[in-house]
Image (cartoon, rainbow, N blue to C red):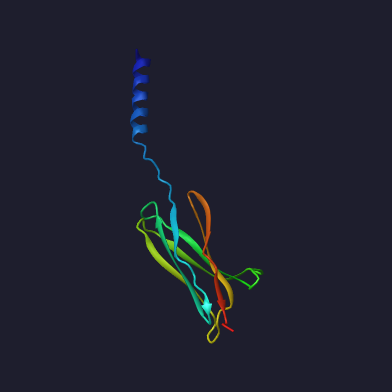
Length: 137
């Protein structure tokens, strides 16, 4: 009879603790490009707006934002600049990034942005469209 009481007591504890178990929600980032970089004649800056929201409140996910360049033949891709942006809100937050030519110069050829981050769903990378910048001649 004692064995049955102990077994019943153990099963009761297992049931109580398993029903109290909190389900863990994975922390993920929903990132979308809002406006693509735009090129043109004699431009000295390109920019890109993007939105992000974290799936779990008060958790943060850091995104590496990279500006890339390639020549007019779509060759020689080169990383030109990089910055870190952090998202912490479950509400959609808009952010932007800008790449500029040195003072007195214009941008030439193709520029685009790569967004890279890691969350509970793994590693992610998305790219913007390419902006073509020309001297206009």
